[in-house]
Length: 122
Image (cartoon, rainbow, N blue to C red; front, side, top):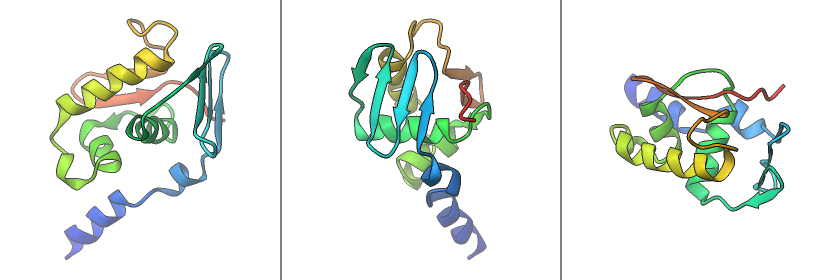
Protein backbone atom coordinates (compact mmCIF):
# COMPACT_ATOMS: atom_id res chain seq x y z
CA UNK A 1 0.00 0.00 0.00
CA UNK A 2 2.79 2.41 0.91
CA UNK A 3 4.51 1.72 -2.41
CA UNK A 4 1.32 2.66 -4.29
CA UNK A 5 1.05 5.93 -2.37
CA UNK A 6 4.67 6.79 -3.15
CA UNK A 7 4.12 5.99 -6.81
CA UNK A 8 1.03 8.19 -6.93
CA UNK A 9 2.95 11.06 -5.35
CA UNK A 10 5.74 10.69 -7.92
CA UNK A 11 3.22 10.87 -10.75
CA UNK A 12 1.36 13.90 -9.43
CA UNK A 13 2.68 17.28 -10.59
CA UNK A 14 4.99 18.75 -7.99
CA UNK A 15 4.33 22.25 -6.74
CA UNK A 16 7.58 23.41 -8.37
CA UNK A 17 6.45 22.12 -11.76
CA UNK A 18 2.90 23.48 -11.53
CA UNK A 19 3.92 26.90 -10.14
CA UNK A 20 6.60 27.56 -12.75
CA UNK A 21 5.54 30.48 -14.97
CA UNK A 22 8.51 31.56 -17.12
CA UNK A 23 12.16 31.00 -17.84
CA UNK A 24 14.32 33.57 -19.60
CA UNK A 25 17.96 33.69 -20.65
CA UNK A 26 19.68 35.51 -23.53
CA UNK A 27 19.14 32.56 -25.91
CA UNK A 28 16.02 30.87 -24.52
CA UNK A 29 12.62 32.07 -23.35
CA UNK A 30 9.85 29.78 -22.10
CA UNK A 31 6.36 30.85 -21.08
CA UNK A 32 4.81 27.89 -19.30
CA UNK A 33 1.34 29.44 -19.11
CA UNK A 34 1.01 30.05 -22.87
CA UNK A 35 3.31 27.11 -23.77
CA UNK A 36 5.43 29.35 -26.02
CA UNK A 37 9.14 28.82 -26.50
CA UNK A 38 11.64 31.06 -28.25
CA UNK A 39 15.22 29.99 -28.98
CA UNK A 40 17.30 32.94 -30.11
CA UNK A 41 15.02 34.87 -32.46
CA UNK A 42 12.91 31.87 -33.55
CA UNK A 43 9.62 30.70 -32.10
CA UNK A 44 9.91 26.98 -31.43
CA UNK A 45 7.11 24.45 -31.74
CA UNK A 46 7.33 21.62 -29.24
CA UNK A 47 5.18 18.52 -29.09
CA UNK A 48 3.17 18.14 -25.87
CA UNK A 49 5.62 15.52 -24.54
CA UNK A 50 8.65 17.64 -25.44
CA UNK A 51 7.10 20.57 -23.61
CA UNK A 52 6.33 18.50 -20.49
CA UNK A 53 9.84 17.08 -20.52
CA UNK A 54 11.32 20.58 -20.75
CA UNK A 55 8.99 21.86 -18.01
CA UNK A 56 10.04 19.04 -15.68
CA UNK A 57 13.75 19.66 -16.24
CA UNK A 58 13.44 23.45 -15.87
CA UNK A 59 11.53 23.01 -12.59
CA UNK A 60 14.67 21.44 -11.08
CA UNK A 61 17.55 23.62 -12.28
CA UNK A 62 21.01 22.24 -11.69
CA UNK A 63 19.67 18.99 -10.21
CA UNK A 64 20.50 15.73 -11.95
CA UNK A 65 17.14 14.13 -12.73
CA UNK A 66 17.35 10.33 -13.11
CA UNK A 67 16.12 8.72 -16.33
CA UNK A 68 13.43 6.76 -14.48
CA UNK A 69 12.09 9.87 -12.72
CA UNK A 70 11.83 11.80 -16.00
CA UNK A 71 10.16 8.94 -17.81
CA UNK A 72 7.61 8.33 -15.07
CA UNK A 73 6.88 12.03 -14.58
CA UNK A 74 6.28 12.71 -18.28
CA UNK A 75 5.02 9.39 -19.71
CA UNK A 76 3.72 7.56 -16.64
CA UNK A 77 4.71 4.59 -14.48
CA UNK A 78 4.86 2.06 -17.32
CA UNK A 79 7.78 3.86 -19.00
CA UNK A 80 10.43 3.80 -16.26
CA UNK A 81 12.85 1.63 -18.22
CA UNK A 82 12.48 3.18 -21.69
CA UNK A 83 15.75 5.14 -21.68
CA UNK A 84 16.14 4.89 -25.47
CA UNK A 85 12.77 6.60 -25.81
CA UNK A 86 13.97 9.40 -23.52
CA UNK A 87 17.22 9.85 -25.50
CA UNK A 88 15.25 10.42 -28.69
CA UNK A 89 13.11 13.13 -27.08
CA UNK A 90 16.12 14.83 -25.47
CA UNK A 91 17.87 14.87 -28.87
CA UNK A 92 14.81 16.47 -30.49
CA UNK A 93 14.56 19.05 -27.69
CA UNK A 94 18.22 19.95 -28.00
CA UNK A 95 17.89 20.42 -31.76
CA UNK A 96 15.01 22.80 -31.16
CA UNK A 97 16.25 24.91 -28.22
CA UNK A 98 20.04 24.71 -28.03
CA UNK A 99 22.19 27.25 -29.92
CA UNK A 100 24.55 24.35 -30.73
CA UNK A 101 22.92 20.95 -30.06
CA UNK A 102 26.31 19.19 -30.30
CA UNK A 103 27.51 21.25 -27.32
CA UNK A 104 24.38 21.77 -25.22
CA UNK A 105 24.17 24.67 -22.77
CA UNK A 106 20.78 23.94 -21.23
CA UNK A 107 20.00 20.22 -21.24
CA UNK A 108 23.11 18.45 -20.03
CA UNK A 109 23.72 14.72 -19.76
CA UNK A 110 24.83 13.24 -16.46
CA UNK A 111 26.24 9.89 -17.63
CA UNK A 112 24.59 6.83 -16.08
CA UNK A 113 22.24 9.10 -14.09
CA UNK A 114 20.00 11.23 -16.29
CA UNK A 115 19.74 14.82 -17.43
CA UNK A 116 20.13 18.23 -15.83
CA UNK A 117 18.86 21.67 -16.80
CA UNK A 118 21.78 24.09 -16.50
CA UNK A 119 19.85 27.37 -16.72
CA UNK A 120 18.76 29.24 -13.61
CA UNK A 121 15.07 29.97 -13.01
CA UNK A 122 15.74 32.46 -10.25
